[in-house]
Length: 239
Image (cartoon, rainbow, N blue to C red; front, side, top):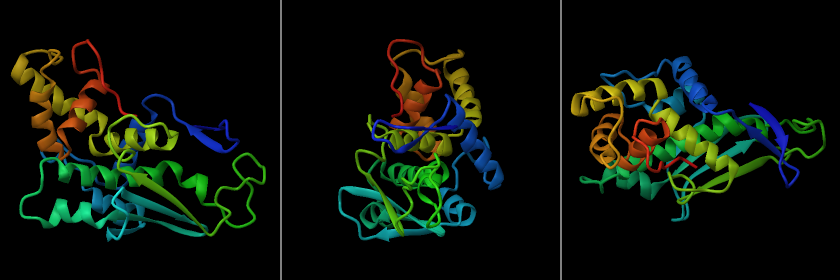
């Protein structure tokens, strides 16, 4: 990771390819929450509350357009809020809409990644210097908000560099690279006796993986493409 100034003069962070994957796997190991082939679904609530030790309000009264909200404070831990409508739809309804549980988990992971990767941009004690030694201290205010809109906390194309990284981290946290490759390759070999999925057959494998990792089919399909497990002809990518 390196720090640089963006066109607006503010600090930005740059991660090398695959670095975010490496970071997320390392954090899961530190948390002793690394998933296994038998139980591949990451316990994302426990990761946030017990490992990150940040406040988590899963029934926050947020605007309908906002799925999640991360608040950074000077001198104390961040706080993550999740829209109560999303949580209610995912956990409290007898029959959730297809993919809603995956979206809820993705939103939790997305916010967790903001804490893991971007906390340093906001958490500065009053009077501290910025990352570059200047006086433009992004965390100088008592409270900084980072709102994740529906269009941001998802797998579609976004423009904000922090959202791009949070989406990449979200996939890496819920579908750790090493384990995902292991499980996916086993499924691919079982069905196709091949190392990769024939182009156009992604949905078949994605359906299996989405169920095992408890993510949306879209998330599993994009992860398959991003990790180059699908034979050529166009690839979707996170961010």
